[in-house]
Image 1 (cartoon, rainbow, N blue to C red):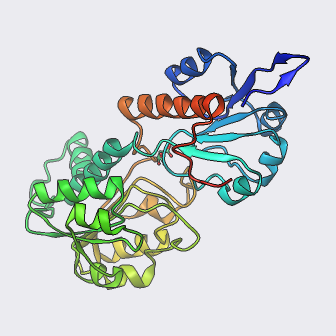
Image 2: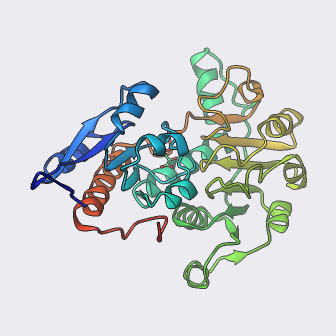
Image 3: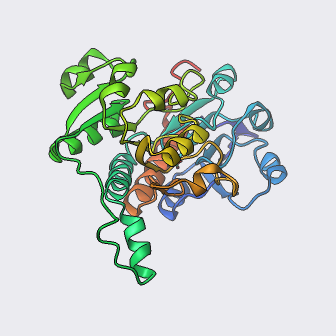
Length: 327
Ligand code: MLT
């Protein structure tokens, strides 16, 4: 909402703290009553200063939006996350301060599910290892035996947008799909028509387990040592959702022991992944540096969507995509 000073409407300042494509900046620049500022190169002190008097803040996952940052931005009306995961934003604190938090929930779906499937195919068929051996002048045709997906059972943990699309693709590959999601609505359950199971049962029978849940205080360490041990020998674990869901030390051990045939991981408890992480040495593991949403299409869409949502929230009081409904 615009405020007035000396009878003049004051421009609403929107601070962009993490990278956003030019189309996002353009949408905000063209909105009358909004001034958009690029603070993507700021250090934390500069960002804190920039937030004084700002009405909007746009971040991706790099900027941690905690109570201190919100205190600096005490005029903030809306915080936009250019992406899906909001674990870097203290939503409870925002709600207490009356700040609306919004994300771009649907913009990344296809890109993320395609990366999860790439990790699955790459790890099941040992594609990166095969490629590396070819580049090293080898011909390891006998050694590079993988796992066929058709006829296997995939366990999808979390059947939101990405999990639902993952289940569809698994079926197209001839896999049977089981799913687990304690928060699924009756409507979504009927729409997906999947065989829903308790997590323990899914882990006991699925040959492939793929995670598609946000990271919360309740599910941190969801797949720990015991859960991995309960999976069938030769199973494959895929995580393109959030770091912190999987115990990385236990995963590395299960790959070394051969209990898990393979894993594909895009997200890590600490990002960038520390040099001494046991995952760096683990066999049959395909790792990517949190690139689920790193496609031209997804980046265009998150930048465009979040700019539109922030513009409409500030100028039209349209909070349709708010995550905290009653701030
Ligand atoms: C998301 O939550 O949108 C994706 O993980 C990508 C990102 O963190 O930007």
